[in-house]
Length: 633
Image 1 (cartoon, rainbow, N blue to C red):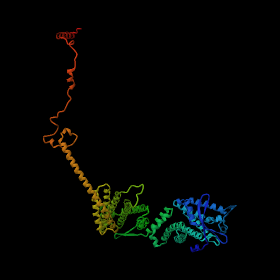
Image 2 (cartoon, one colour; image 1 turned 90 degrees about the horizontal axis):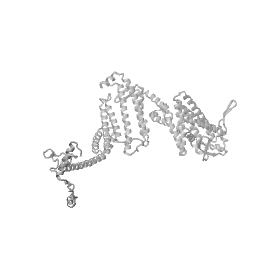
Image 3 (tube, rainbow, N blue to C red; image 1 turned 90 degrees about the vertical axis):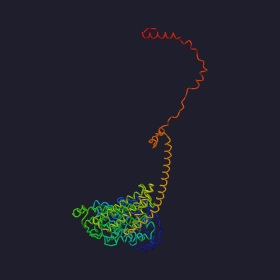
Image 4 (cartoon, rainbow, N blue to C red; image 1 turned 180 degrees about the vertical axis):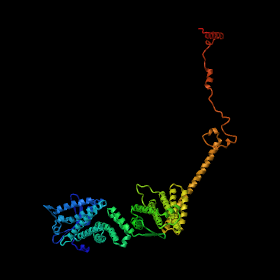
């Protein structure tokens, strides 16, 4: 059935029927047409219906067991409604299949929902869901792999029954339903062949399914076409992987991209990782030697072979994360670099264990002199790759931080604010790795390599000075930042004039000089203003000190004991210690009131109290002797 045949069908009236059952509620959109013979023409949007049921009943979270149980219960309800309940009658099992006569005899209420066509469809979906469930479980129980393959064969059998039903002569089914049934059947067949490692059969079946879905997407509504396109996106990586296993050279070049696409669509990531590992091991078996810096080295260790193979494919592995609008791009790239560095570390450790047994390697480690064996130079090559990938990872982080500092990207919530100091640390790490490279064994006499590395070191020194200067500007240290900007210009011009500098870095040098120009003038102007303000403040302070000293010199020491002042008069013989002679101070005198009042007061007469002089002496003497001899008065 071709797509052109779908355009010559009877006129169609689109209607929506909402089917509410015990456990599900879905919108089934079908096209109802009545033929001249009086039969109901059934039309079922198979893939949109399947996608809706899967998202509602477990597959949104990858729960295949839940979806399988739903399919079983829905099959029981469909058989009950269609009166096709199977069971045992006595000792014999009675099997009831869907036939063309049952389709022709369908009532309008049942035909409008396409339940007759859903019966074999749900049987196939149940078997497929069970197979996917077993696929998860076979990681711990390998014997379940055969059970999984048998369930996929069962799903294929039910899908073929659906095709036979809709393609039978006299079946009241429209062209679109026939196309969808054929696409579904060949897709199930392709999945089965893929699991059986029948790459040619899988490629043929999946290609046919992809073509049918492509045609359906071009003639259906926007919403339905999105569903078909998503199924096509799932098929394409599998097709490429099949082509690779068959031996297609173009497919081998896109291996990493295809495996990454499979990772997004296959739930069993552990099995996919195992598949990737096995594929790389197969390719690594053909990798016998590598050539670098004019020397050819034999690669004996499997770990080293696998790593070198992945390192060649690494650029295509991260090419899918190059979209700048993707928020997870930086994290994905950094994660890929970290994974590659872990593989590199393992390869270096395995290689070093073999090198320890080599006496030349041990002597070389002690004296740093002598010949470098091919295996030792391979160790140098792997170490160089490790340093290079660390630098590339840091540059990815630096690019993302630059966008945040310039305002192109927003600051992520919940993370520490990015400052120029963060970039300084990354540039220091880059410089350290660049300085370590020329000292690797076998590269001491490679002058070209030394010059290339020195050119990069000069550029990254300029970039590091630039961000240190920005840190000083943030701290309002204008003089220091101006000096560092001048150092940036020196380093940048030196790197720009170096012919061995890469073209990409040469472009960054020009951008760096443009960025420095404006900020350098800003730092210069602020440093001048700061120096003028400091000078004026210093002059005012000196003037105040002189005036204060002049005032203190006039005061004696006793009046300025709490103030420090180096008085030169204290040592020249004329110290000003205190006022001498001391000044007169007024003191209170006798009140004038009593002096004046004495002349106006009348005193009492005291003559009677005054004693005569003789009487007083006698009385006094008798009193004294009486006291002395104890006499009584």
